[in-house]
Image 1 (cartoon, rainbow, N blue to C red):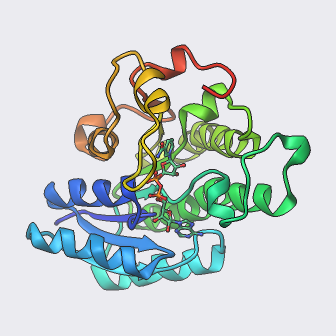
Image 2 (spheres, rainbow, N blue to C red):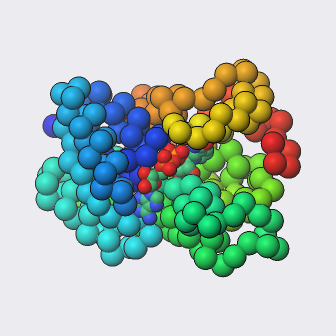
Length: 254
Ligand SMILES: NC(=O)c1ccc[n+]([C@@H]2O[C@H](COP(=O)([O-])OP(=O)(O)OC[C@H]3O[C@@H](n4cnc5c(N)ncnc54)[C@H](O)[C@@H]3O)[C@@H](O)[C@H]2O)c1
């Protein structure tokens, strides 16, 4: 029986690459995102390599909408084995006027949005997936996206740091709850992954890691591939950093 993965943010840069990478492993992919256009692109990429995928438009901040989508996925694919919550981002996800400013200057709506997508989204997606996996009785894999910033903090990103730090704590506690059901719960913490179309900022992408190279979406997707595979059977409650060593040297706004 081919496994089924529910991936949030699967229309995005890292999410799209992760969806394609898992599809190459024969995993059937529920491509979930708030953006219908990017969902279509990821579904097309998967179909082009002979994989199986279906797109779902949803808002991960709305628990009822998350439950609805998971119900639909189970109806469409017949099961659910993997959940990867990748939807997220820093202040930019609150809209074009949102600013990267210190907490004392930050506006309510930015803090609210960042926490809702990154952290509340992890709650809703993990809970909906775990309910299905427990009922199915065959174990499962839950991965939530944290960030190197969730470990070390970042000035101008207190909301983001706290939301991603929350994901790390959620991962530990949920691993304790779901261990008896053979559901592995882990988290992935990327460093700086430059999205296509973003300005090339050499200092951020090259000089803040120890390898002097850019992190690619595929570097993160490969880590997820391992964590959702049988090879990670005995790993749970952990956060895996993929940042070229950036967390060893972060300070201030580096
Ligand atoms: N790019 C980096 O440098 C970096 C570093 C550390 C962590 N991360 C984390 O990796 C993840 C993916 O980042 P990315 O760089 O690919 O960003 P991205 O913007 O390309 O992808 C994020 C996706 O989330 C979707 N999304 C946003 N709000 C949503 C909502 N309410 N409901 C459903 N979907 C929603 C967006 O439409 C988008 O497709 C994020 O959680 C981010 O915080 C990224």
